[in-house]
Length: 238
Image 1: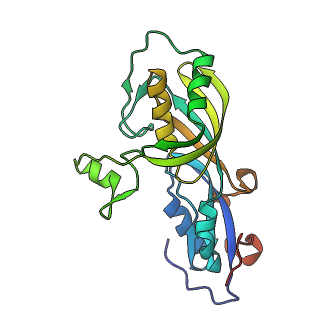
Image 2: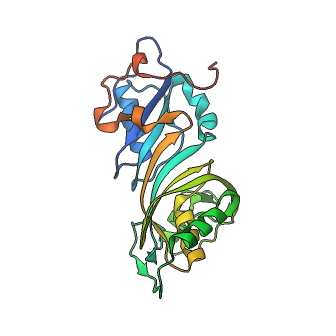
Image 3: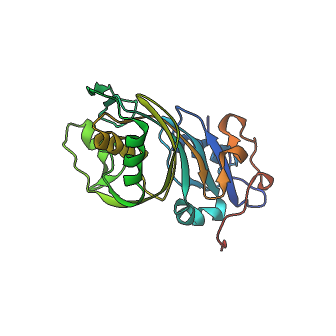
């Protein structure tokens, strides 16, 4: 896919909420939106890993000034945790290291551990993350054989609602603030239960008022993207 000539009509500004499928990175979503919009300046308000699906907010034109405000919005995730083992990446991308468990924790034990993760907590990001150490992403350092230790930092978790628990699978809906790693939450819950814990599935269903139900599937992206397809940005554009 080549780059189209820069948009020559009336400049377009606003938000396009995209439902990202599995297997596609957030950068690829931005690339496709920018192409469909005639190479209008485009950014996104929060990364989703290729193994996650759901809401990616693309900011076009002057709406790129709203990226920081959007990234600060509360987010909602449908999260599937496998308590049978750990992985190096804290998700299903790496090989599972099984954890022997003499007795599966009951629902009351699960609820008690989840309650410990509510509010403002200290959370250690995954070593396989895009956080930069001396200008280089942590995951690149790990893959190069370096030992990476990231400092714990405060994050906010507003709610964890259990949708289903059938050992070893735990499905929860998590409402949280900026910077929360659901992979770290999975590992932490498993450690507190004395089991394993890695993220088996993740879907972001909302960022602030922008919900997946009203998002545009990436495969159904308008071509071309015009002003009529965009939502207003949440802050005044200058």
